[in-house]
Amino acid sequence: MVMAGDTSNPLGTYLRDRRTRLDPIALGFGGGRRRTPGLRREEVASRANISPTWYTWLEQGRGGAPSADVLDRIAKGLLLTEPEREHLYMLGLGRPPEARYHPVDGISPRLQRVLDGMVLSPAIIKTALWDVVGWNRAATLMLTDYAKLPREGRNILRLLFGSDQVRARNADWEGVARFVVGAFRADVARARASDSAAVVQLVTELSRISPEFEALWQDNDVVAHGEGVKRLHHPDAGLLAMEFSSFAIEGRPELGMIVYNPASAADAERLRVLLEARES
Image (cartoon, rainbow, N blue to C red; front, side):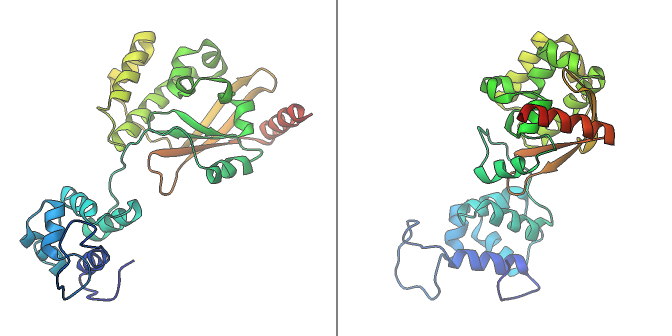
């Protein structure tokens, strides 16, 4: 995305390119005679609420690395899209920005088609608060029929700590509960949502209805939920051992996908029979 220019200062080249693409009149600056298109440096600095000198130094490759706060201000001032903001971070700090938490009610049709394409692999998409916002048919048959639940009832923690049926179906409920709480804590911190009203409300509710959740939350354990094995007592298929893998969704840092696959040939056969039986 870096345009032609000084290759020794890609950040400055990118900033110059972005500001030349903006319309000064549309942004409230006078037209007048301008030697170059777009905004002047001092106009970008004004929109970003930073020193014009500091902004000039950034374009010139002077003054050291900018802070995340400065980059966010510049991204806002230059009307950058989220991918453009991420690119700005990569140029300025060598890393992507931290995820921003946004409440999510659903997923796009394209993402739903990805789920539906995994016919023999139960898969769900969840938010940082572990609300399930997308699922495929296999997940409905193996895990829960989320479509029959109210929106607030599709939360994995509410199901795990508030449903006797879900508890009984997990062969190692204690291990699953500890794992989920630790992964949940990591997710809300990564999404910078730890102090949000939604998280506080959910933690307060779960602590009230489940002493076990409250104890696990007080332990302050944090885990990565990359992969593992889940064992379920299914009323029709019997005991199923399912390997799970977690994936980030490109461009949607507030969402994560969990895909389950049978841990053995016998588990695969039991799952296949379950799915075919429900089709008939």
